[in-house]
Image (cartoon, rainbow, N blue to C red):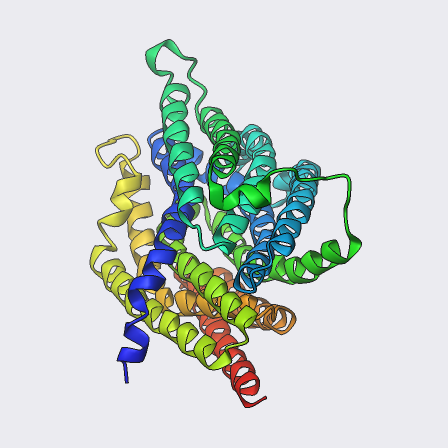
Length: 455
């Protein structure tokens, strides 16, 4: 019985691993920033966390919106229709560029909110110049996302990975030179980290475009694109798929961002610990995100072929693979919960020893909760990918809103600020929200695929 699922594992991992490495690349930019900035002190680490909290919300909208391109390209590829695939890329690029510029503008307008969020003053003053530069990096990042989702829609998942690896090398190099003022470069602290992020994202776009233009598989799609002819019908189709997908990602990222802000109310050490646990959880989440793209592409292909029994079997094999991998991550978090936070801090720093010890203690408690939500988080994102492959986005958007904001957030708010659980209480809300999302989304997938098979 299990063999009908396990025989798909190798192909699913082959499709997913470049996406996982690419998504880990995005997270690794934040990981590198956090580790390097963490050497400067807990206030600097908290400032990067606060600045990134705004950027992550905007980034979630951009990345979520761009996922509309993948199922359209996958369906066109399954049906052998290159013209529709090219059209999805062209219109997706136009919409993603406009969205990137809009999100940058909105963050600049929201900057004064930092002063009204009951965050430590030294943290706010450090965060503002960092935020301005990292907000601008959203423009190239979302253009890159459009090209990445197109490439993945054609089951070519390696090229975005190469671009992301290059971006990380650039980011870490510039960080090293500008955060600490190495080799005679100016010592810019966390502004140096922001410059590294901005430069690496522009290089990422240039490099993926260079790769796509050179490969024969992509030539029919990326040559002679006429941006002057824009079809309202295609724009509407991408918006109808992209807007709910953006909201789905926004609802999830926003509750994690709310956890950053609630932690800031508890103090800079609680916020720094939250940032460490969040960064570690983000990395394991990227494995779920990679498998989610595999689910979206393979379900999209089977939808193009109108083979719904096979569609369900393939999707369930990806769900099963995700469950097994997330159990492994849960065990690693349980075993390493006291050691993992020490990677982010200078444990030999005598001056900040009391702060660092408290941060490690709080982070270890958060990783205990994070170990349990690995499984819920992985399952919900992969089922969401399968539903996007079916181009079912409206009901899943409602499900994610209910799970995170009607179930998860009230629990985080109450347990975090009004009980002795404090930081752990905030994360208990995250655990319950993710679990509710996983259960409801699977019920939706089960219902839809049975209905398609019966019809």
